[in-house]
Image 1: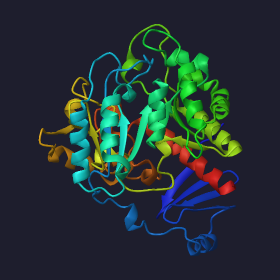
Image 2 (image 1 turned 120 degrees about the vertical axis):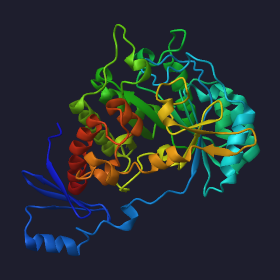
Image 3 (image 1 turned 30 degrees about the horizontal axis):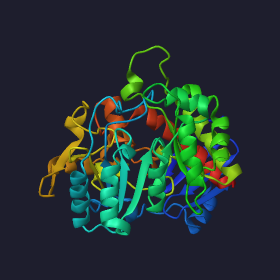
Image 4 (image 1 turned 90 degrees about the vertical axis):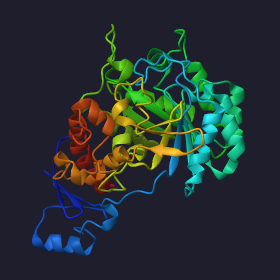
Length: 416
């Protein structure tokens, strides 16, 4: 069980006090240390070893270079009916045309990005839009690093096409068949697990390919988290991304057997189980809220809100959040960002983007005195809006989680 520890920020260094000593993490130099107690002499010695630095300029707010990457929300159609889908995927039609996809990629490439990256994503299943994917990948080829996040429910022939064209694949899957088929059934109510297993095993057989899975964890499935991780390991998965379920979209629907999000202690339990598994197996673990532990900055939790990632939906509209995919979602009036016109010009609501780009922890009053502010970066703006009605006021649940887990992680790093 993760116990709460006292922590404070001194210059760039997070100082965690526990009953058996003091643990330190210098964010600028990435150094960690443990001392039995703090004194002037100990502090001076630590300073000579790279602790207690002035917060470097690299951690301060600077306006980012625009459009480093592109995300295409290819469709709202979906072969699954996931119990918690944030976008009600499959309940509405919508398919990006190859022409719209081409205009988006061309407009993005006109900005001359360094190491261009395009991700196929969606408020549905992107592999349903084979035509658009093949069109842009075959036209632009290896000039761009391509990736896709998928349910794993796709024809074997198209999966092989993705492999042959070196498209990185992340599969959304929640665990063994009894979990997967409950939370992520086919739209007709059928089982999806065997199809997704086939996709993952095919990927795992490709030499040198990373096999990544993103799993949503609910209150119910947390009870089996260790079995879930062993199952992923046995499938040949090398990277696991764990996320607690949020009450968005279909998860808010009132019905029998409704799913429950993780509470505070359960979020901590999920992280500890994941870390223990990753350490014992040598596999990679990712947890979204902790992405920036080793890359602290004063601003920008995500690329779309800062203008670094261009997110284009089926209609060629720009959104500042992939969870707010179009104007059918109530928050669109706050997150819609512009559009790409018929001539391929990127037309942005500059006033709104400028406001987004000022969402940095130095401007978020609740964050200014938090010891973890450079790691947290204010958290997800959309989830903050849902929780508080203000993107400048962070989600209190996220704050509580970060303030508890960061000291635990610092202690864990120092003890290695």
